[in-house]
Length: 68
Image 1 (cartoon, helix red, strand yellow):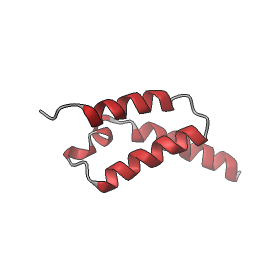
Image 2 (cartoon, rainbow, N blue to C red):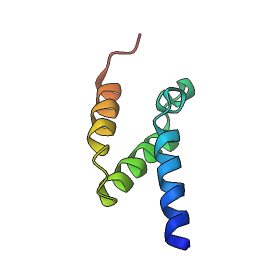
Image 3 (cartoon, rainbow, N blue to C red):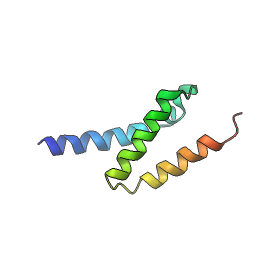
Image 4 (cartoon, rainbow, N blue to C red):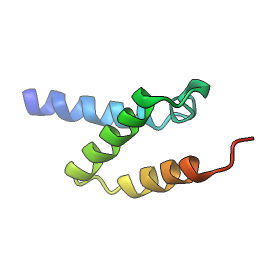
């Protein structure tokens, strides 16, 4: 039951972490947001979730993009 619950939480958190408003950091990318991005990516890699590639491409593109 604990593993099933943990898996469900992970799946839900993964979806929420990739929402556009979350990805944008609500307009303020400070230290907490960067740590959150790091922990999300690490959890996807550790969990052998192939969606980490999409996550990495999206986040690295945001970090190097010119602000408008």
